[in-house]
Image 1 (cartoon, rainbow, N blue to C red):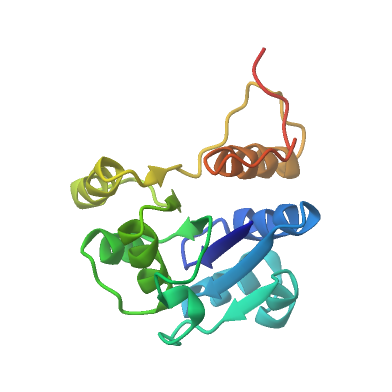
Image 2 (image 1 turned 180 degrees about the vertical axis):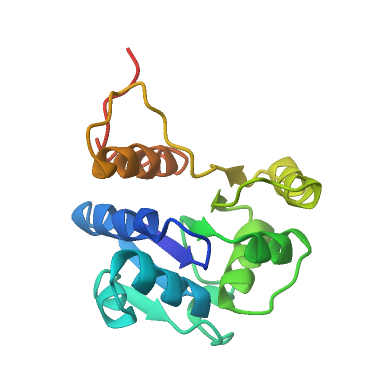
Length: 183
């Protein structure tokens, strides 16, 4: 299995880091793309620099490398997750823009009919944000807001992160046993 992972400048980089670790533990090939603000926010929130992020992925692709394999529909990926997803990135994807490799890989994922999961992190949401999400949801993109549940009685931030990462992986049919399911 091959999953493309995009990390942008929305807060909650911890979700992206945890996702990469979970996919690595599951032995799933990852193709990581990090925006400049994604790099900045990950360093600020998690004290993890780009070299450490790169080490968590199977492959790393530069944000402006529009010739990377993941920019082509002939590259066979099983899906793409953008976690966290800024409203800038969400808006570009909803508009069909390919200004960087995350946008282009998402565009390819959509046009090839593959699974795309977007984890937006913004509050409050404007009408523009909601309309962009609706536009993407109507074509099959899964929108999984960064809002963890509490029914499993989380005790740590890690518990909150794990329920979100587990729910994201559910969207691609990947079982990771990261949280206790509702009974």
